[in-house]
Image: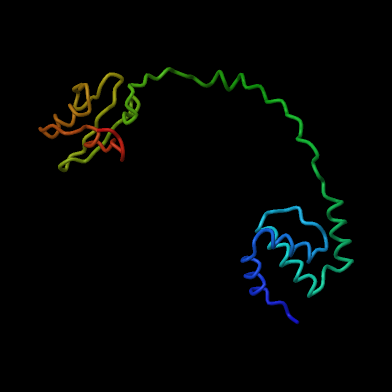
Length: 168
């Protein structure tokens, strides 16, 4: 009598965990220690197929045992290797303190903001204490945007620095 895997699988999936444990014990003829439904279903359906179609041959079992015995199993983590001397690298790296103005939308000093506006390419240099455009220094991006457009506008919006959810 052929096993209808799809039918059996759907029947197993409708069972409670307690029923699956009982089925496991009936199929494997041993106590079940697991409560993991997915694992139980896979094991039960596998065993039902193996019982019906035949299990691994003795030769296949011996070969699997040989492969498992040849496996190089690590029982503990390898020892830490000493790191190469990092002093030469540390001497080559230069660090500098960067002041943060508090507004995370502002780019770091030295950044060049570029935008097309009415056929012109606008480039504004971010300074430590302001912004430079066409040789003039401005205290805020909004002041730069007002000088460019002639009307008050948000500098962050004008230069595309205001992301979604940012406070305006």
